[in-house]
Length: 151
Image 1 (cartoon, rainbow, N blue to C red):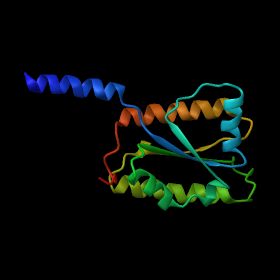
Image 2 (tube, rainbow, N blue to C red):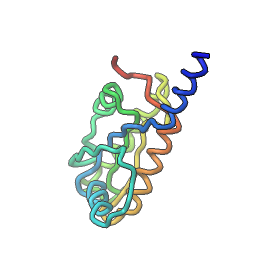
Image 3 (tube, rainbow, N blue to C red):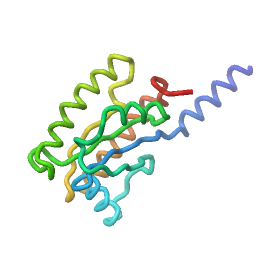
Image 4 (tube, one colour):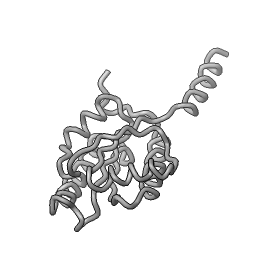
């Protein structure tokens, strides 16, 4: 009887569980897109915590690994569209870097949906809201992070 109650309580706690997602956003485009979403009062899930960076190319892969170690359930890195980077090729460097990091994280057992990468311009507040909602749903389906988490 106790095991049934524990299972019921675990099921209800899983339903109420909300993921913690950290977003590294490019100052010039993606952060401005998030700002536009806020100013336009476009709704998106409150699960996201934003860290503004000068360029997506400046996000060190160790930042992402440390973010996952310290309890984030998912990470979003977002930058300017290809060809629109204010630092010429920073977003292209980021794209290559995160393709490798994503393969590495999959290799060590971190689910592919925990690390997300997107291109969002300053004029795409609606797209920012959509991307955040998709990332939250994807990470929510995966459940709480267990790999890399320090105890």
